[in-house]
Length: 273
Image (cartoon, rainbow, N blue to C red; front, top):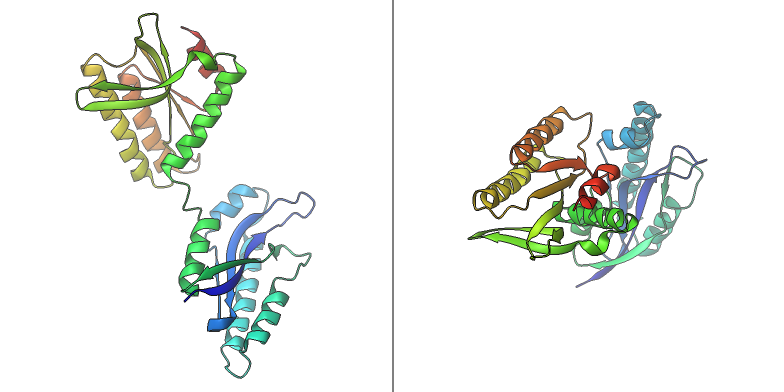
């Protein structure tokens, strides 16, 4: 049986003047099953990275106060004499009421589920942990950025998507240029090497090192190959070490590597036909 639950995203907005905020939690209420739950972001690093002028203690203290308040509400609603549907709806409405404070709630939303507690975890994973941001998702975003770079340079129509094959090995290049004989001579591939997990970045990068090496051995690797990447977190030495190591491996194959933000280098490579 599906139950109608209400939930709201909890946002941290330390500077009201700019209107900037970060999603830091979910609160969910299901009157029919007498469920009231919440999850808050424990990691401080994401907050301090976004609000770099903010003292860490400010977020920690605000989160601690909110956690205490929500725990008290949970305990109150756990009392069966108080925990009727009308009371729950009233309290939820009061909890998410707009206030001029650092921690505030987005407009309430409704979701149908047969497992409210599991749904809370799913909503937290989506809106707070952003579990939809997979390597493929990020590389599609990088492809869009690259497409815009080529379009602004008025050379987008000179590139097409191709798959270069050599026996059982193949590599998809979303942007490739063919010469008058139809041979792929230039290829550009956005590659995500800034995974939160350095081991995942290493594994993904080595998959492409292997592909390009096999194409090179078979003589199928285009004369010019450019990988456009998103740079890793400058504060994460493990990420940087993996990135630099992979960059060297690619360069040893004659493949160029440049950040997606280096539009000048990308344009020069793409124009040199």
